[in-house]
Image 1 (cartoon, rainbow, N blue to C red):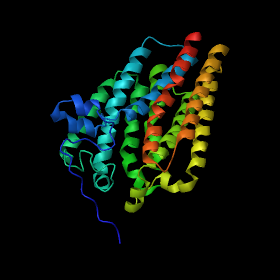
Image 2 (image 1 turned 45 degrees about the vertical axis):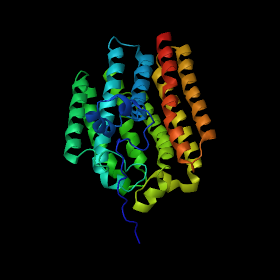
Image 3 (image 1 turned 120 degrees about the vertical axis):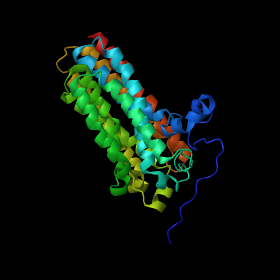
Image 4 (image 1 turned 90 degrees about the vertical axis):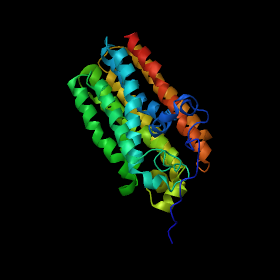
Length: 324
């Protein structure tokens, strides 16, 4: 007999169960804005960081290939604002699509839609506002970058439904979350060279790594309601798969560095950039040593630690570019 859907738990303050305690939205945002900011995951900034990091990789590595350009500071800043807005719009769309599923999962039933803090109509309007604001930033870039930005909407639209038809929804998340590696490189250089494609592939492997860890928090609830994920697919073999994604991330990232610096004639910069990849690998190795896949708190902690893992190569790549 299938389990009856569980109703959202009462939560007068409206906090979301898996948001960090004492986050800025719950403490400082105007009360009327809180449900919408929670819908955008503004109370959980980790997703914005994970969306921004591939953009920063691309800007810094492209700088190593051809030198930094005068608009790169604007590009980095605007990618940050764009990541916040598009992550918010994507999460809003995800919650609209998953509102019935979220009401049946302990970790997600306190989200604004299943808990009744926001209506579907209100969420749709909020999603459009965020997307249109992000579009204003996108149209400051060149036309190749604009085209890539528009194309990314297809991946954003598909992702919430991937868990319904494939055991690999994390692939679709990786395709969407790392699109910034292609877009930012195009905005910098008006081209998408093989190095950018290798960097994009590295980001996808990295996403498979961290989001499989994240999905282990919900594997029991997901099994009850029939939602697919790599966590459920891999089961007891998950650690082996994680080591594989770990290795693929570093190999593909190193390949991107080799391709970017191949014609630059900057051996010192090349070595510094590779050192950044190696340093990221050390952090991922630390994560694997401390990860307990049977402890949801450990999974969430290690998942969040990937912000730091992703940021580690950025100063190395930037210094490598300046050395040229």
